[in-house]
Image 1: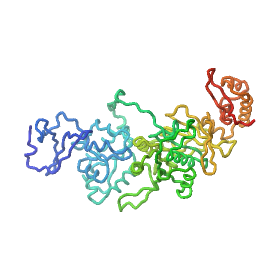
Image 2: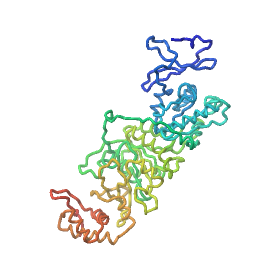
Image 3: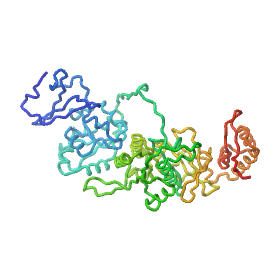
Length: 530
């Protein structure tokens, strides 16, 4: 064992601990005066002694345990030097660096940045810029987004510590990160051949988990859901009805056993309705438990330099939402109405930007097992299939695990149809009809078997004559009682009634389907007028 590093004519002024994922010390980087660096590791045979080499030690990132625990919505800052990292961490950022300086980045580090937002701050010299490009190219396609942040006014060979020394602060750095365009590699870099290494998960080590529901088979917990429809159809009314059910534990309208649900708290962000004269009265009409409801009106910073308040921005302020979730007991639901109002500078028509904005929100929902319902509108292009009609990029629909559409019943201007447009986790979810009566959402008892495309088609009034013909047909064939479904379909085909039209007619009449020993039957509800 050599101790020449300690005995040299220089002085140790700082040591930086490199820990593994569990927090165990693997090695140290030692800083000397005059400026120099070395690495040492604990001597396993002589406690308190050091070996001045890294033989058999796998290099890790500096402050790795903190990096792993960082919230998904935070930018992870990569800089060059432990001193820079420590300073940034003291200011509230999550930062890291690789050991032994520039050009020592290992592909083994990349796994910690999968799906994350990354900001790289290079030293102001050629080696620093090349190192930043090396890191960015290595992480490209692994991290959700990468930004190489240039610090204005930085002296030659200066670093982020020098920049902060000159009077700049955390708020300025956040603004610089926000204004920096995402990194894209040059064609030459893209064409380089890399040897990818798989991140393998053994399924025998994974514990299966059941899907948990806020509203059984409709709104999952820990996931992002969307409620979509044209303006003025009652989407906001419906979200407040859901909030009231959650806070009181009242049964969902489609539960035949009328079992109370788990009570919980609700956090509401609304950009379109006033709290005093709209949101609160509607909640009172639904007899919501107000002690379980919070609204986020904006965000502020603990800094005299940040005046605020600022409109909540999903791309910047998720830590504030997470704090609200933690501080609100038993939070089970977050409502964001409309979701596009809270996406900051995100271009809602660009897939990559929408994915980058919503992925951390979805991760936050999963982390705290809360349901997030985002409200949005339909596009005006009625020629598109329903799944493509959510306003903005298709990434909205792709990011959500459930998408429900509210449409208008053409034959009853006060009746609304709630249909499943996309429900990855649900099993054959049915549709529901409701009306808003005296400021309250009132669901009909019967569940409907109608798709979103059919509901929107009916809303447009297409083939109204054919629909009325199908309604008359069903009234006639079912007036004496239950009939085997296969016989109904056969008779309908012989009368040149399409399957889609018959389904709409079934929904309009509230036809009941039942399974019997001889097969499925259809029958009219008891209260149908003739």
